[in-house]
Image (cartoon, rainbow over all chains, first blue to last red):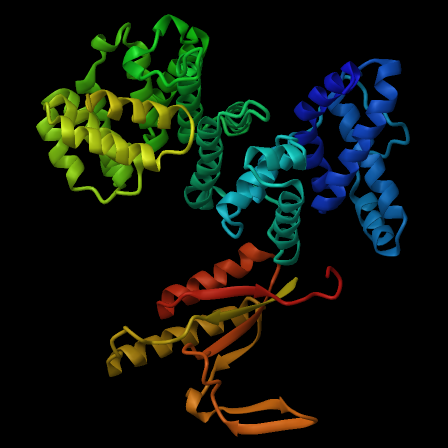
Length: 405
Length: 119
């Protein structure tokens, strides 16, 4: 790719979500919007190297995409009818391609996000569609993110959009009364994107960065919702440790061994500010609690300074809100730090998580602390066999090996 | 506006049979809900079906058809009834389906009819 293409591509990544959302609002058709924005991209590749990037690129992309969409609609009879209806409702009609620099493109991305994350769509499909339409990733990039082939991913996206169209999933933000059911799904989709990014460690596309971006968009457009702020805080605090999670050889570095001077202080500060806002808002929820736990770690100057009592208290609240085995496991680890290995193992052994590698890793850690070396080694091996390939797997195997001398 | 089919997952295996009172109560509640769907202008068609043993099956055989005592032997699940409603979008249809589902304590599948305009 030429330098121009890289720069223009970057701008489009930032602006295409708003443009797609706006054009869907105008004409009610996702495919039309997607194609129109794609055409606008092609035009930008031709024009911008000559004219330079416009001062209000978002407005340019939206206006150009709108005009491309109108062009396409003019070409067939059904489209012409739709155009007449739209024109009757339009407040302005511009013939030029440019919107003025001051013109604010209304942000319809919330409608787009809730539509992509509608419960009628499978969770994996929700993420893929959100990355494609809201984040502006290409089909190839989404495919790479999930280790699928491009044609497979293209088919999946087509199927999801087809369902939206024929089942008539409405393009709207749910009513306040529906949000308790609908908002958690959006948050889950975003957080799943983030954790997938962590697990895959691919840097192109960077799913963690895209998830944080989605979190920021949601925070901007739903400034009142505490769980939205909580999710963003959780992701920012986790991101703050990213640089220290693996060493120069790509090996895993545990939390207790991480060089905390390598943690990003601006992300920590931002996360903490969000948590303070959440506390004042006083509408607690699971993401806020997880963020608060992450913040306790962030505040400890060294691992030894970690306030495990506070973490355990937060887990006590989290388990009541979200009584899942995974939360119980994480709570048991905190319990172990406060009350010792035996207490932790008692809690852990009760959990039905044999296929979940952190379960075996946690058991192994506490068995090791009790000096039960053989059992610990076996547990590390069990964890290693279940872990996906990468730093986690190597680390677990190494610990098993070290115990077997 | 789009037509949707609301069909219950059938098969009462594992569920204890309802008492007479429960049957009466549920029937009344269902009739009430159907009246609500009608007054909202969403009703197209629907009803309960007779027992699967009352069914007859016609199937292609050679150049013609073969008629036999029903139902389809292969399916354990037999359709007990269905509704066809007219709703403005999926959320609207899901609203009705949720009411039906809660009322008869059964999963409901919501499927759109092919609309000649958008297919």
